[in-house]
Amino acid sequence: MAMTENGDLEPIAYDLEYEVPLDEQMTLEQAGKRWWLAPERVTDWEVKETIIAADVDIAADRIKPPEETFTDYCDENCLLYTFRADQDTDGSPYYLAMYGWQEMIGQVPE
Image 1 (tube, helix red, strand yellow):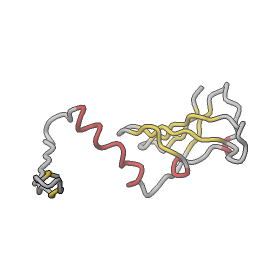
Image 2: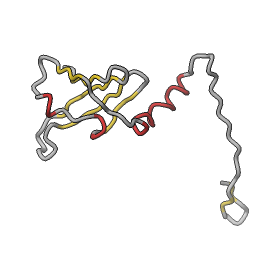
Image 3: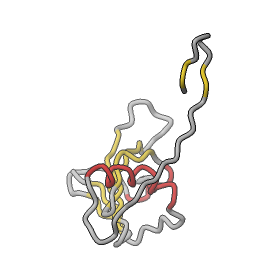
């Protein structure tokens, strides 16, 4: 937006072009731009196996699947998310979970 002498705002037109070379490694900036939309593009959240760390006290059926939670981080290898086993209980602890895209494995680490 550009401001005129009267204080009115006038829209400015832009032609944006963004190119990603496919034969080179991505830059940190390019890598950072791709992760935030990845969970919205997933159509199959199948979990073939669930791994729970020995010190974590939660049953496998109480682990929330990734599509029902808030995504904390995501890249080409995995998705990290947090969840509460009991949404209705304020004192219920939060758990960190990881979903591996390729293996379709859900994990709750220590």
